Amino acid sequence: MKIIQKIGILVFVSAMLIFIASTFMGSFELTQDSISVSLNEKQKKHIQEDLNGLSGTYTTPIAITSKIKTIYDQKNEDLRKQEQWGEVMYESGEELSLRVLRMSATGPFKEKKGLMLFLTFGLAIIGSLLFILPQFKLLGPPGIKHHGIYHDAITNKGWVAWIAFSFLVIFYILLYFYPSNLINQIMMLDVCKQWLGGEQASQWFLYGVLYCVAMTLMAIRMFVKYRHNNYQMVRTASVLFFQLIFAFLLVEILPLFNLPAVDLKNAWPLDYDFLFDWNVKNLFAMGNAGKFFFFWGIILSIVVVPTMTYFFGKRWYCSWVCGCGGLAETLGDPFRQHSDKSLKAWKFERYIIHAVLLFAVIMTTWTGMHTYSEISGTAKSSFLGLSVFDIRQWYGFLIGSIFSGVIGTGFYPIFGNRVWCRFGCPLAAFMGIVQRFKSRFRITTNGGQCISCGNCSTYCEQGIDVRSYAQKGQNIVRASCVGCGVCAAVCPRGVLKLENGPEEKRINDNPIIIGNDGIKLNV
Image (tube, rainbow, N blue to C red; front, side, top):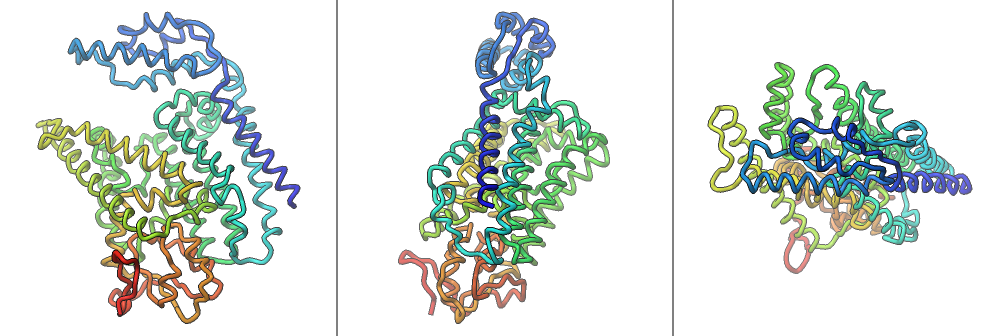
């Protein structure tokens, strides 16, 4: 069995190396014709002549992307200085570079897409399954132990973890800010896009496929690892279902029927661009279907989310529905023990996540006022001296890209799998307030049975020192708890139990108090 796993690792690493090398491969024949068909009328007027000067053969996308962007950005800057606002080209240089590269590409990534797809995604899937499936035999009897997590280079912040960290961070930076450098990886997925009725893959389609493949493979690992616990099996199946169907397939299929590409489970403030003027206008332009999706988004955010959180805690969303939580629970599961359980981290968590929520509220208020003024014909680009465009651009950059993507996922191998959910997600903060003060959910403890093994605290991805509660027989009522139930799954004595019960009995008579001298029982 171990030989099969070693073969699986070799196959997976080979696929990943090909995937990474794709960034520096390919051939691009820039001609006046390929440049011309990539430009709109305004771009032809201002930059076609300069771009024609770039005609020639290039061996990597990196070699040409920076030149295209330099010409594009310089011309836009000149137009702004001359105050020719009607002539400014508002498309990004990255979007233009992607089109030019796609039109000028030659070689296997354009002509042998199926082969390249197999050599990357195909081999990665095969290698992963060869490593995961033998664990049915190797793990022995069902049940969770530490399984050497602090002796493995991938799970103890060793050299493998740092390689994974570097790959994830660099990939997210390229995906969000320099997608033209991923043109080869994007083009090979045209095959999958066409299966779904589309024509050409985009950077976000690449991300969606990677997301779903990673979640599916690591969900299989979860089924193997937690096969003794029905709650974990069903919960994992649930988050996988909502990601594959709602967050990916429906978003790809709905536009084929002239319907908006909406993720029906995405609630504000996680869906931070919900009230952006372009989004509202696009939805209302699609008739009754678009209006339904708009009002569903409002009902989901202000009625469904708090109501469900009252009855079931935030676990109904964070651990059963959310795609971010689904990736954290599957791809991030090997790293859950890295969450910081210190009091200092707990205090920092509360300050920063509620600051993000406040930022989201301010941004949404200003954006909503601007959108209303656009629709009512009294358009304003600023309110109380704050530019609507600046505030939403900064939110999208800092929270929507850097925090949720680069840090939120890229930091899995070093800081644990719920960095985004614990410190940055505004929806988690919103539901956490409801869960802490007005909810029926709690984790009950039986202190008399606790043997202080520490499994519960080790495996808590939210940085909760579960053992300190269990030792005192104290119910766990924390705003950050996502109800994943892993603490109960790894407890050898059945000390912990997830419950929904009468609200007045959630907190014991002697609750745990947080103070400068640490955590103590109020007696």
